[in-house]
Image (tube, rainbow, N blue to C red):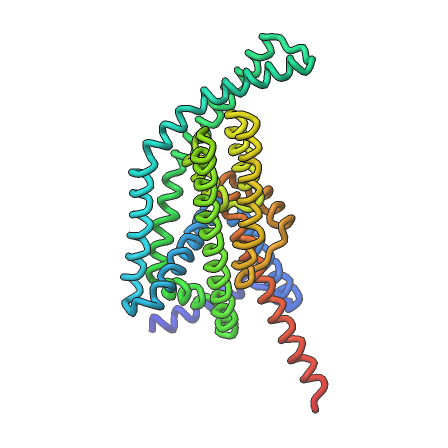
Length: 370
């Protein structure tokens, strides 16, 4: 009886005032809802872009761990979590060794930087006076003050870097979780897609992972080669001539770390190396220029071509433009991730092109049956 009364009340209430009886209006309302959803998602993506970049950084780190795990899997037939643990233990061990072996030396070399800057400023002043330029002592003090301001800027930048340790920790933690069981997260994303698109998603994800692993492998090889070669060449100068180049370990580590950033990293490391080299004289400065050119030629003509054969080929101007955009939008983190992000965008566009070509071929086959 209660159910009958309820149905009677529903009939007395009449039609809903929000229902759209016109089919054309219902279609336009559905379109408006779709476009509003797309715009809302774009606004949300912009709002949380920094967090999305951190997640992408975690994916890059996970690909590095995954590459090492796959490499170990060729010789060690053990479970994946154990291989991931070995890779992580190796990385932590290397950092501990580096801090114990080179930590005190790098601290001493960094302490020498103010003295080198002051000496370089005096030599530059004397050279300019010898060439006929009238530079007053006040101008020299002003330049020195600007240099100290620059050092203060670097110090503040380092403070900001230390403040970003939380971001680094998030990247490491998320990357480790993904590297331990990547298929779990891959299946989760595929589950939210239509069934017809899941196969294409798996293929795209596989190609992206392959490209990312190769790209990161090339970066690591380049960093190691440039760092070791720079250190050997800088130390060799002191062994041969008896006049050691200042800060060889610090310059080698900076050169290796900055090799992760194509184009920009090479310029920054080269300027630092040459600046320190000329602090020891003209011959030392010219030698550091030669070392810089040798390092970049080895990386550009030997290391990169060997890796580029098995990974994505990116135009240098396109990479530089992406670095400038990402650096402006997201700072140092965007600069580091610009190259991997551009590689992933290229893979996605290539897969989309293949899908369109396949659909066009299927359509033309239906229109022109044999």
